[in-house]
Length: 203
View 1 (spheres, helix red, strand yellow):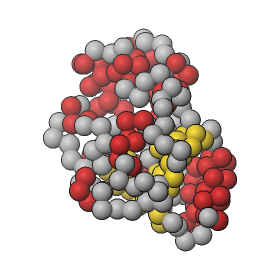
View 2: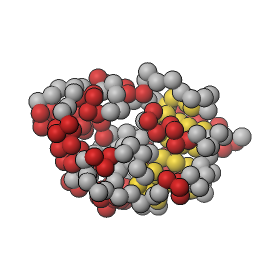
View 3: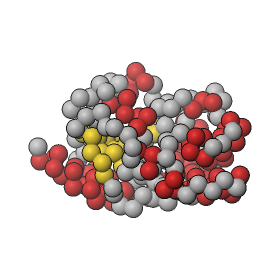
């Protein structure tokens, strides 16, 4: 099977880090469980200037390398690769973040996965003239059987794949969203994702 995996908040605990990061930068205390919107500017009530500064700092190599792994992620992904699945990480991070992101993956035993940077969210606003390694047209020519994603804003990238099984990693900002179809499944951890994969693999 071909498997799509988002990077932030699926493989690593980005938002948990941001909660402390914003408190340190601006004294704004929003606990992880109170991050109600995928739009972090809205969740943290940041000005445009604060948001741009935060996102630039958050994409510095030492910060990207500091994110904790989401428990069980690497082990499950490596199981899938060992079984012959084709796994691709499709991240909304700009290509300027590729090298430290690649290093993070390698440090966590995910050397065998490919990573593509796709402009999912129009984030050229904070990293000027940023570029991405995967064009939308090329992405839409790719086929996936399973996707692991946390952002409701990314669901539109699955509309061309009606048979795709989407495992939505449970996060505070997606708990109030309505899923587009019954092929979307809420998953609270990587063990749940593993069990669902096994169900789909038997079908």
